[in-house]
Image (cartoon, rainbow, N blue to C red; front, side, top):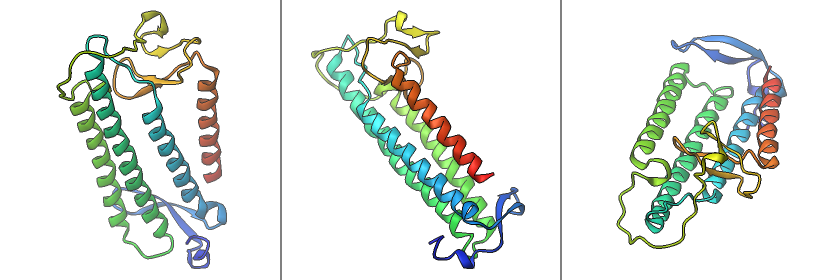
Length: 212
């Protein structure tokens, strides 16, 4: 739509607003400036896909006391965060699409600001509620299971540097659950973990430079 409507886009594109909905910064129209937001949007979508894939494929951390119950809790934990990633990503994509359409069509700036604030706060509140009700690995999910099954335990102190960074070059797993907090971390003993992080940093810097 941006390509097809390029001629209808104003020569000065609004890039920044204050909380009153007033434009405080413009950019001169060019294919680089009008496509900066869709490129950013595509990058975010790829990140959401990556995070959702990670949610499903990361190694499960099971309790030694009740591994079967722990596995069931972990499955619920992953499904809830997967749903959060998918629907949160869709909502953010729709918000960015609305901003992009405001370059082409007349959309009240106050509406854009209000929608953006409500959307961001709603996602943050959703994440807090989900974290509280689910817990790390589904620890706060109530299930009733018998205690049997196999266990996987990577909670050895020697593998957790400073208590937060998992480093185990003999473990082929790249992504594991955090020891503290909510979510996942990487096995920094595997070179591929550093490649992934450096790749994301370089892509992010490239997008930032593109929009300057």
